[in-house]
Length: 124
Image (cartoon, rainbow, N blue to C red; front, side):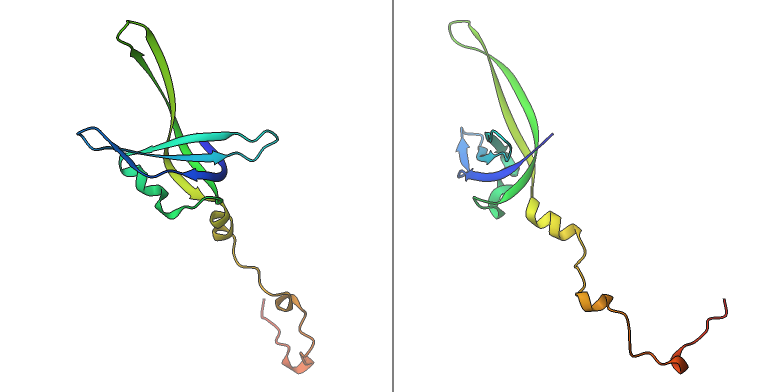
């Protein structure tokens, strides 16, 4: 799955527990009639993917939806969902990078300085 929008917040990388679990959060604001502020978690080595991005950039994030069950000390079962990102792309750069440069308008002008004797007939 993918989500696209503008970066609203990039949090610092946080480390939890003795095992060194790392998590970094990103908030993306979707660009639709009713914009949504979506929290996306990047974990472990994926936290470094956010280093080259800044607030205000338009991005596309590949995500996985995660769900888990937890039983509290009183025996009540609770369910939690999270959105985990695993790839991020700058939408503005990808559009310009995929398109070839546009040649100047004069490149399409007809050649008016040709002489008839310069014309060469091809044999086919």
